[in-house]
Length: 404
View 1 (cartoon, rainbow, N blue to C red):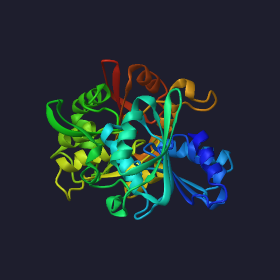
View 2 (view 1 turned 180 degrees about the horizontal axis):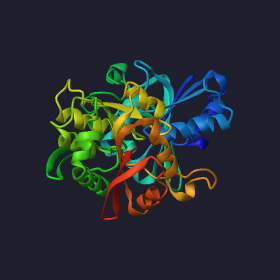
View 3 (view 1 turned 135 degrees about the vertical axis):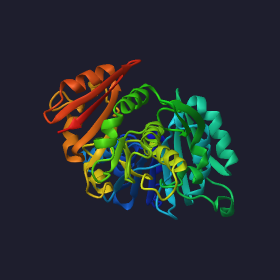
View 4 (view 1 turned 120 degrees about the horizontal axis):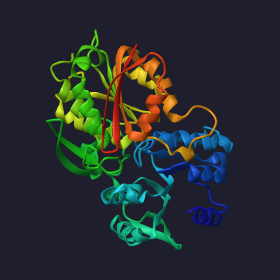
């Protein structure tokens, strides 16, 4: 990709550089940062990734490489999101091979439509998808300007090759309420299942974990929640004033949908907040909750992208209107131990540190992890938390604690 990008700059010598550049699916930000360094201050780079942690890492790497914020901005958002009416002189993408066929098909067609006159899209794809992308580029009415083949990847450069009218419906793919209605190509499957005797209908999306089943972590957390019925209804979920609820890393929405149904009738109208790294998972969970509960109820969720509870603390408190949560359920995505620094606190200790500012007095915290992670998590429990229960099954363990 970067080799082809450098050739593109050489061939454009003496011509204006692209002013608006989109790095779609930026990961750690390598492509966007290289583009910003090569193009200088004449260009504005928008980096986007569905993962909030990727956004933070991209900004960190940009700062380390002395790319100032005006030259590069990063967002946690779907592919090809952006300001309404915005067009791009250059779209760059190390396209995620597992994004899903319908998503990739839409990407080619929509990216061509979002190009400014004379603009180019440049994507790199694994070789098994090369035929797919050649066909999609042709079907989209785009012109294949260049194809560069390597041992495991192919780079495609394409531009618009059809009248503007063909692309008049091309708009940015922005997150928000009604996401799946606006962009149905993200829908992967409809799932009917039962969790602890409660039937659920879930629409699963491409690009989010837990495609078509609740998974072991959700199953043990749901079982533990049912065991703690009295505590949840009396203290942790309702609270004296019906305080807000938080589900961190809700996946496709299996657990929050179960929790709301399980607590129905025993909990006053209250605010539900969904947080996590993956914006597509948050949109799936929001959709599944909204489709199950009547519009206008206080249970309709607010979505907060958050790499973890500590980094997202300010926005999580803002979403709860400044109040602390009476119940937090978390399904944290643990990083490999090899990826963590040897100095400083570990990820599990950092999770404990994040709770006191967020959790109300008498509030309940439920966490589901692999059995080994849960064992380590419980071992570093600080003062102020009392363990209420534990369930272990199929390699997963759920733990519940009361705060003071």
